[in-house]
Amino acid sequence: MDIKEYMRNKKPTSLQKIDTVLSKNTFFFFNNIFEERYEGHINSIKQTLLLLKNEIDNFGLKKDVFTKLLLEKENGLSALLALTGLSNEMFKRLITIIRISDNGEINRLVNKDRWIEDYKDNSFTEWSDERIKKLIVNNQYFREGVVNVFFEGSSTQFLSEVIPLFELKKLDIAKLKFSITEMVDSLVRYKEKGSYSGKKGNNPELLIEELLDANDISFQKGDLKELVVNSPDEKRTMDFIIPSKDNPTVIVESSFLSTTSSGQGDKSKTELSINQLIKKHYPKALFYGFVDGIGWYVRRGDLKRMVTAYDDVFTYHKDELDRFLCILLKLKLQNV
Image 1 (cartoon, rainbow, N blue to C red):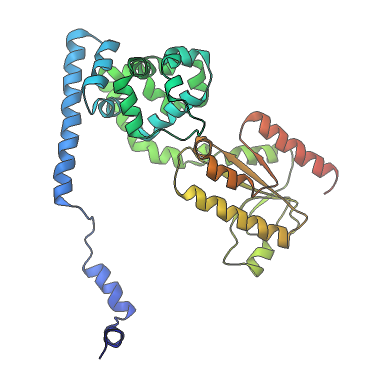
Image 2 (cartoon, rainbow, N blue to C red):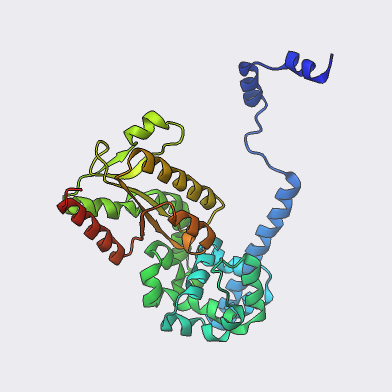
């Protein structure tokens, strides 16, 4: 009996496969060696924070204490982020915003003219953790600029306009004082981060809904009938179908990304295939996309592919929302 025949005879039933998964489930996989090693990392950050608190108790809340922390401690940045509750991912977004913006107040705050020339690039890709840490150690002005952001960031007009208040509060200087109140605040924000991100009121699509409702523009959400019938495996739920599924003149998809991921490339490919289906089954309909967020800003290759899927592209900037409304009103007047 060859191996293939043996395996066919030994092939388990679906019930046996389910039983294997249930009876032999490890529940939460963990590697003991890794766990012990990572506990060492956690303990190191904890000890660094305790030393930092001691420094502040002895010498006061001074910027020099924090620049020394970033320079001398390998996990100094991790400790600072832990103290304030700012995630490493959000910190990287913040550095990206600082790099790409040209705001006088921010430029002065971070000493931008003393480090940006040596680290300019035209790719607009997000800097890696290693690159940021290396610059913190090697460039005094960048290091001091990072500390300035944690001391004064919440009071800058520019950052208050581009960073959600939920995150901006983490740049409050009070976070650096080890006060019980502020540490409780950080714990609550950490706990509620997932709920905050998932709330409907935090979804930018709500702006489109409010815009359409305020201007008596009918719309529906869901599946386009022709796609359900002709391409059930390829169709997808549409964010906005104007004015209706029976007679779509404008079809809108929204993609707001505040993070980056490898899935962005797949998303752009999906939208291209949807474009082809719409053009085939609804040749008179316009396919519009709201593509916004720093996640798209720093992934130019994926962005380039993404925008080719749409007849026009908008962001959630007020000017762009006005432009979108203007087009819809013109179409409505023309009874298109």
